[in-house]
Image (tube, rainbow, N blue to C red):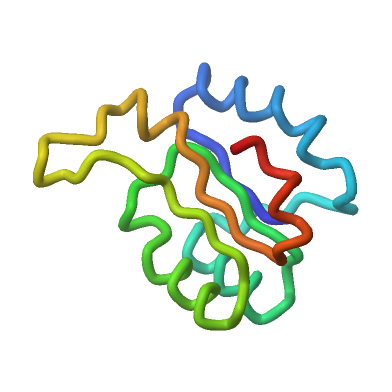
Length: 110
């Protein structure tokens, strides 16, 4: 599984705390540094899945589209449009962006 972590220490601590349950069924955790590239690696089968909380849309949009077109299950956050003044930082930090096979989709706390 691939993931990423916040630059904010408090948010990062929460993300690490949630890894225990999320890692069941995965052999390892990969951290490439780019959500879009991680999603592309799910699309080509290199990674089984990707999940990360707190991304901005520009962090994942292209990779999510590529993974979706490759036949992967993709979950994008449903947040308030920037044109409507949102999303708030709190909403964005809670939202998950995930991809993988449909069978793996149940592993993510959505």
